[in-house]
Length: 493
Ligand code: NAD
Image 1: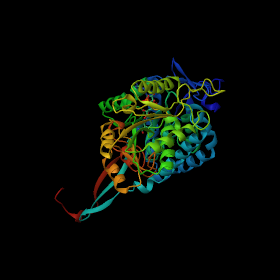
Image 2 (image 1 turned 30 degrees about the horizontal axis):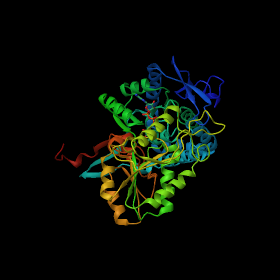
Image 3 (image 1 turned 180 degrees about the vertical axis):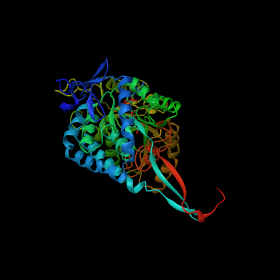
Image 4 (image 1 turned 90 degrees about the vertical axis):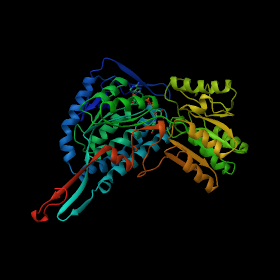
């Protein structure tokens, strides 16, 4: 890690990554990056200035002509090598993701494995972007080809320090764009490691650049005339601001926001599987997944399943098989939600408040929490909590459950637990969410299927990964060609 930093303390003072080299920021201010696992100070992150962004954009613009003219089959060779390097350094990356984000080693490993899968998809892009050609009138051909946009930006959140950067980077770059990425100020370390791997894989200097910072850099990205497109992943509040600001500057923008995902549990659901999946979905990554189950709609007689859910939840222990939440502020926010629900009459069946892990007193842990008898008007029923908490609402019918799910402004995921195919089909059809599961608690579509929610979970057109992302990262060139004069004049000439 020494090349990432310039000072001795753990990882020291971070640099930006511009034109293939770690570069000192002109920042006057730095933020501390702290491990949520135990409070260890990890690094000082520069709040970069617009001048730092200018330098990154200049490097990316300079690299663009050469990179975009490199044939796609050559460009993807970098990602075959990058995939190998991710595999080679899997353990090191896993440790870093866990250390800066607070997730368990197993969760961090799964994240790195997902990075590998995303990269595999990028290597298949030559097959997917082959254009079309047709003789449209005698001697005249039309053909289409996918052309990169130019310099694009990727603004990412804290909850997947390696995976979300890999949602955008391999596809955008393999398709011929150059990129500026702005990591989350809470977890900037993994991104720097990815930059080193991309360089080792043979990516030309300037194609991939990192500018660390917070909102000032995000605003500067939206405003910058040298940036052609902006992708954003984070909370809905910021997604809306970024979408409005970037499109006001006539940039293409795709902004993924927050979520409130509903699990509908029907009385015929298989109890063991349902209980296990509900707990894994709500507590995995300490509930800090935009696909985590946050609200459960218990339809009809489901007491026995709820009891099992509580038993499963009690087996999830912070510091052992449950990681930390990102910081003290998050811990307080989550615990306040639980307390408010209790004060409003909900019943806390399993209580994760006030958790301290022995030996890691400076870590920020919240235990798994099951809240029953929540009503749809409570904040825990409506808002994203982003912690290991499930809010159970009791309803009498599937219609009632779907009405609650549909009324929520978000729309990332919804899942149903049932053995009845007809009921499951109704949920697939009627849930107002971009990603739906049947007996799957975290219905993330795997590559080549694309990832993207609906409603206030996504602003812009299309999805961020998979085949759908090709549309976002490229534009279509249509050419109409005549070589022989004998083809004559046609109706459009
Ligand atoms: P966040 O919105 O606070 O931050 C995301 C990015 O925006 C960061 O890089 C941050 O520096 C920047 N930012 C923060 N405040 C800003 C402001 N006022 N102006 C401009 N930029 C600003 O999100 P987070 O806390 O890092 O991540 C958690 C959120 O991300 C949750 O809401 C989660 O649901 C969401 N998320 C969504 C998806 C999805 O696919 N829809 C995936 C992962 C995370």
